[in-house]
Length: 155
Image (cartoon, helix red, strand yellow):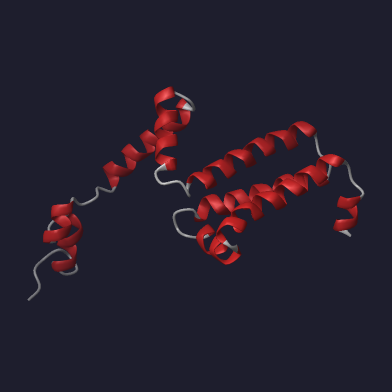
């Protein structure tokens, strides 16, 4: 039933549907379908893959339901940004270089400000042990492990 609706609909939906098919098959052609599916869900790109696939589905559904064209275009821009972020995960240091460029140019200043403030609060409340503390076993995290339930010495 949905396929009949898509076939009978306007050319914009055909364009979006063909772009979805092309986007998903392009890297599958280079890597092979099994390797593509395996690499898509690695921990480094798990969330960007999920968001990208979600945006593919949302744009298709909104376009098929013939919502406002401005909404479709807005969601399409978000989908393109999600695809870019997903693609950057395949390029060594691609995400870091892009973030450094955006930070230097001042693009999306509120995003970086919120991120920096949140990181500052997190680092104050949850200090990470240094490499020396990890190797020697000293520091706050390991004191409770060796000191029993209340931090005292074991008898």
